[in-house]
Length: 153
Image (tube, rainbow, N blue to C red):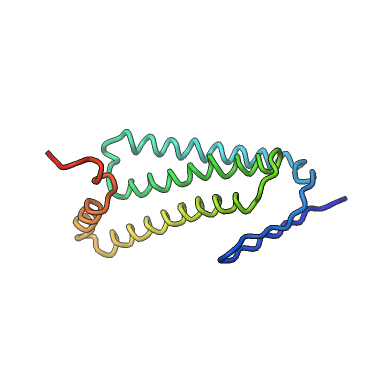
């Protein structure tokens, strides 16, 4: 019986990996089935959230834009991370460091969205009377959408 050991060392200037690929990990069909189902549920659930927020005008409020942003980040994780992990394991022998960079980018996007949502809720709880004005002014001034919509008529 031969075992696979993978070590990933992350530092500020390099990512190195020492691995021995074998067929043992590929025989755990229950694991790959779970990963596939989890990715499918993630993609479908986040697609539904994106659709509902985008198509329902009454959901166009500041906290929901943060939820939409988180949903887009998690949709990307389900659409990119799990399938590329499966492809890397079964069919394509590529440099894992490149995949780790994309995985980390998507992970940081999700965590960053959670931090922004937490800050938004903190402001809403600690300054409830000023929250609407505070968020309206900051969102109007910094929203990328405003750069593309043009001047108001």
